[in-house]
Length: 367
Image (cartoon, one colour):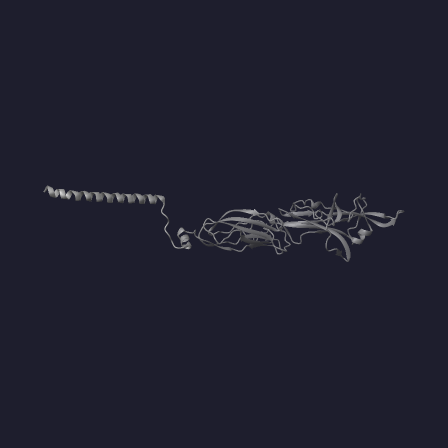
């Protein structure tokens, strides 16, 4: 399709192919972005560009970018399709390798007083080890005409076709190890800027020993932060020392549709009567900056009171004056037997007295 004599027009003002690399140092384990954009002067597209394929394209150009599929020495963090793939039907069509894609045009359509039709995309990567990473150049191929003329049917025909290309810049990124100076012992690999918020999912005003309590912890990327984070790789932070509470487990809570947010639920149990609290949860992270530093995000403490269990006497007193409980069936039986025994004793005594009384006159006559 393209001749060996294709013309290098990288220096021309009516076309651009730009690579965006991190402005701050890249650290091992810290995500970083690579961005790519290309575009043409709108008038040049309308008046001089030639379609490359049978399918007519809004931007009749073919882009070749090897690192979009993977960058040696790194792991890709993007699981989504290209932004160009996700473009709407009104996006600008172009060729990426052998595929026809659509991408939304950039909002900053003006550059150097020229109206440009431009498309941009980006990818996120992470390098696990220090060292050098080579970012190969992208290549943009297209064709244009030196001029046009009308044929006998009145249609415009290109005259003097020129196969052209623009070669983007190559870059070498130096990946640095995380600094040892200032690294706290609590640091567990979190990278970025975060905010923490803790709240209770249960009523904490009626706690007794043995009561279950659920704590929700949200970890959010700091709004407006341009620092890439490894939020998706984080594990649930450990809770601080607990007084009167015991941790029984932790699980992640799904938060669909909320980018830059993860949530965990901790299962707690009250173990001791008295005033206590859920202590602040801490997350130490490395902030690539600038300036590069280790920082901590904390949630606010949650005060609690664990009450003693309610006693039966207290419950009766709260409902009105105390009353005797109705005797149980065994108590009634014992009382009945007791009464029968007493009655038998009385009857026996009366019978004995009557016998004595009847004997007394006879004893007098015998004398």
